[in-house]
Length: 214
Image (cartoon, rainbow, N blue to C red):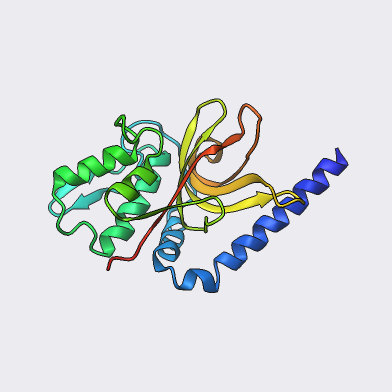
């Protein structure tokens, strides 16, 4: 037991080190990631987890129309990450020429409510609408969006924060920020990556990065 604990501590130290590096000068040239990280911590932690309604911590307004209402009883993952995506990209003018119908389609795809988007969700939206690009496991940086699936086929939408590595440099865990039951709403989590039934399936982790508007 002691040996396993020591390995976990070492892996966590690596994760924190990577996170501190990527939150520094590297992110200075990536304003979108930095803005997403800053916005993500502006919402109070917890606040309740409620798998119904919109899952959004605030109302999302497109022009004179309300795209999604604020969820009154708590948030959930897709509503939280879509709020981050919507607010930051809206501030950069990405949605200025898009109709409400187009925005509703984007939202439905982000939530995985169509057959085309069900597996990759945020990555599908980012690529289809040219809001950015997909990124590999090796390229991942704090502030990227991620849709992942566990080996028991349960999934989650989140903002990526960092990897955990073992002493051989193998990815064994992922830290992220989202809304989930275990944190009673918004909060940070670390989950293992591997063969366990509740571990994350490395082959079903879909990362993407929004780009600044040209």
